[in-house]
Amino acid sequence: MNELVLVGIAALLLLSVLVSKISDRFGIPALLLFLVLGMLVGSDGPGGVYFDDPALAQSIGIVALVLILFSGGLSTEWQQVRPIVKEGLLLATFGVFITAIIVGLFASLVLDLPPLVGLLLGAIVSSTDAAAVFAVLRSKGVSLKGKLKPLLELESGSNDPMAILLTIGLIQLITQPELSPLRLLGLFAQQMIIGAIAGYVMGRATLLLINQIKLGYEGLYPVLALAMVFLTFGVTDLLGGSGFLAVYLAGIVLAKQAFLHQKSLMRFYDGLAWIMQIAMFLTLGLLVFPSRLAPVMGIGLLIAGCLMFIARPVSGLISLLPSRMFNGREKVFISWVGLRGAAPIILATFPLLAQVEQAGVIFHIVFFVVLTSVLLQGTSLPLVAKWLKVDLPAAPKRIYPLEYVPMTGLKNDLKELPIPARSCVNGKTIVELGLPEEFLIVLVARDNEFILPGGSTVLLENDTLLVLSGAQSFDAVTAKVARLRAT
Image (cartoon, rainbow, N blue to C red; front, side):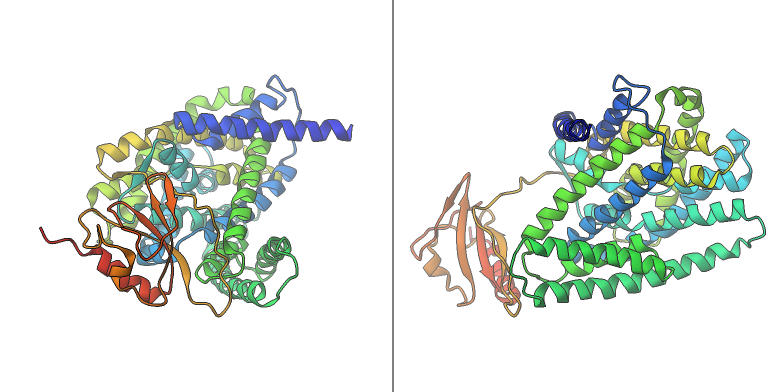
């Protein structure tokens, strides 16, 4: 029996990896395919596997979200995010709140639900998933101009805590009518403040441990970091803070500084995040009964339409109203990119466990709204980006045949330096450049080849230099390379 379970798990993982190729080729978000695969394996599908355990699904979802958020924070480039922190936080808090209010009032009206139950539905679908956005754009070879990418990354990484707080707070108000609505404000402030402080402190502690503990085996560093991630979430939650916000911030704090085995740890957590996404989406797909989706399709389409065409545009435009960082076309694009992911489906299990009125209907409506959002908004993103002229060709990511492991006390880092067309260094040998002593060219990438450089190596336009350098020397050489050749 145990062997059959292992074979089944292996088959599901293998199928999930294979269907991701469909996502890459046709631009269909992978999460949608994982959910559909789970539904096919489930009791209403050919697989016939009966699964109706919201508590287990919620537990799997929470663990998965913790690891996905930490991985997202770890891969966040702080230098890109820092200029748009204000805009990102406004979208992640005020934008989520406005979305929840608009969708909640609309749901109360069309479903004839009590106002608090309608607001609960709005809160559940209020957070976004940027991972789906970038998966679609990457599959179509599209990137985004300016600060759009870091803004959407920051918003999606930091807006789940707000949606979770609203969902938990509204469930408490529904199940305990004697509580004051002002409790939500106090709960929000407490969770955000404690979560932010705990995230920063635990991120610094993780950085210190990784750089100072000197483990004898490289394979133990991911285990150490994993322990710190769960410790961060658990301690923050016990203190009354948002554990989800804490783990995301801990990842950002850790990523801001160089640490031992940085590249290998980032690859490990990227792979772990993918495993968690697959497990989470398959579980949620198993939990839903497709036969129960048909009765809510009409209502689901109305709520999805309200979310996509009213709530997200209004919340996005109002949140970004004071910002001069983005022009009108970029704000319109941000307003359309509100893809919903796994977080709303996980949050929809909370009313089921709390036995809220019409919780089963809410769960299947939320599931249908997520499917509609991913299918309609996700597949239209490249076209909308092109129409609004905010798209750029995606730069292929070059993989180098070496890896640099930063050490404590060493201020140099391995960086890429492209040689632009008409640069004043084109046609010159490396020895002619007069490079600083602490600036070392390790490799020259030219077309699809790598060249081991020497003093007589001639640099050509569109070469990419892989260099080992400190920040000051790198900036100085970058400025020299950027100067154009006289014509």
